[in-house]
Each structure stands twice: as structure tokens, then as C-alpha cells.
Amino acid sequence: MSNDVPNYYADAVVNVTHVNGVFRITFAQQATSDTMDSTVQLLLPANQLGAILTGIGQAAENITSRLKEEQKPDAAPAKKKAPAKTTKKAAPKSK
Image (cartoon, rainbow, N blue to C red; front, top):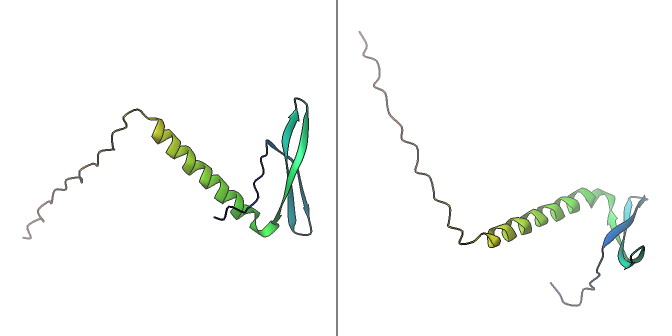
């Protein structure tokens, strides 16, 4: 990813609107203990919102899972179970 992409820090979502098929999501930073300053507005096509939210959710789950694995002290790799043994029954003898 290019380093010339602007970065914005946000503490909260302060407003979400939907007009003409576009979601406008306004993010803000905590300015003081009781005020928020809007920092950036993200415009998303309504037909892509579900996919974008799903992608963000999956990424967050993956990151959380990796962090939990890293925090386990001396985590031993999981042992693989041996395949279940199967027994073959003899076919009934025909008379």
C-alpha cells in the first residue's frame, strides 16, 4: 500500500446518513472530555456497505485471534488426532 494515502485518527462515529445511494459516515476525535471534533467523512456506495462491513469484521476477528495466540505463554502446537479406526464386518453368509 502506498505511503501517500492520508491517515486519520478517529475515536467515534458521530453521524451516518444515506442520500441517493451513498452512505456518509462522519468520524470524530475526542477534543475535550465533553466535545468531539469531526475529522473525516467516508462516502460509501450503499450497494457495497454490507461487503465492506463484513470485510472489516473478518479482519478484526483475524487480528483478535492472532493476538490471543501471541499472548498464550509457550503455546504448544495442537496435536493432530489420529484417524478413527474402522472395523469391517464380514458379509453374512448366503444359504
